[in-house]
Amino acid sequence: MSSLLSKRVQQVKPSATLQVTAKANELKSKGIQVVPMGSGEPDFDTPVNIQEAASFAIKNGQTRYTAVDGTPELKQAIISKFKRENELEYSSSEVMASSGGKQVFYNLCQAIINSGDEVIIPAPYWVSYPDMVILADGVPVIIQTGLEQNFKISPEQLENTITPKTKLFVLNSPSNPTGAVYSKEELLGIAQVLRGHPHVQIITDDIYEHIRWGSDDFVNIVMADNDLKDRTVILNGVSKAYAMTGWRIGYAAGPEIIIKAMKKIQGQSTSNPSSIAQAAALEALNGDQSFIQTMVSAFEQRHDFIVKELNKIDGVECPSSYGAFYSFPRVQGLIDRLGLKDDIELSTYCLEKLNIALVPGSAFGSPGYIRLSFATSMDNIEQAVQRLGEI
Image (cartoon, rainbow, N blue to C red; front, top):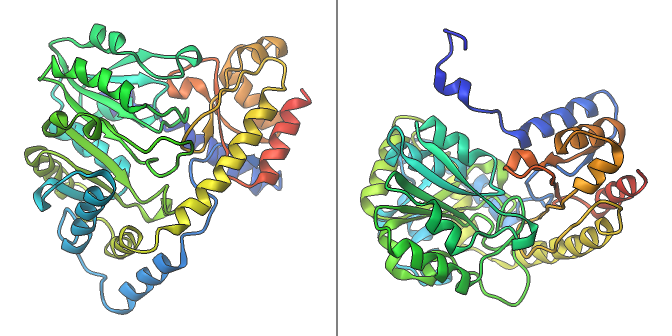
């Protein structure tokens, strides 16, 4: 290891999804038309009412520092959102806004993880979870799942993984990268295990809360079992539901002692999120919500198409998902058929030979899979599956 760089930073991997996007953009700059199936952001424009709220904020001088944890108005909107949509009650001292959902998770790890503390993360997982745990000097402990169990852990797996060193358990539903959604009954089974281990804190990443289809209403672990509320931080944000990825506004709700510690971390790193983006997020949470269903309907149509077409390809097994905007097919058969080493080589092959940008499953802790984002146009999706079907 280099003596110049810290051991901490040398243990951390660059974000695989950002690397794929950067490589695709590099090829585009050379005039190569790449089909973008790697990026995890809606291809819709931010709704006009939200854009106008930001413009109004600029013109009316809302361009200065705000409170570290967000403006009083935005915090009240977050409180109202949880009460209106989730039937959960929080006070102002139990919520905060951050520069994206990623900062919420980072703040939490820095606030509660000590050296050697274990953090249980089900795989497939969002690429940044383990590395942010490592940056807090914690130990990621991975529970493997696969297509056979619909990418969801069982209560037995969780029970067998918890140790006296376990500090935090991570849930993400709907899931990035699989689109898997835990039912209330499944969450109650997990909650029963956690009740027996009161030393374990919980974070539920609900960033894809509104991007779901099917008949079931959204539920997280606190909604399923309110007795876990005083041990759980809820992570959410405006990026996915309102096509606001670049605005960088996430938010958290949880026990006052933890939120206060997260605010302290934020106060010594970024300080407040952008005042203008906060004004836009305020309109997103309080304003017209009809945009969400329009966008989700489009995602559901794309999902149905891509699942059907991918399953026609020899060596590909693509399950249906029920939320987010990703397909996570098992492609080991395709890897073997092409004589490639692994899913990383397959992803490189797709980018360099087929001009399709996608992400290898290994980046999410699940070798033998790939992630394709269908938060892109139907034209791009059709091109991608056609090219894949021809190999």
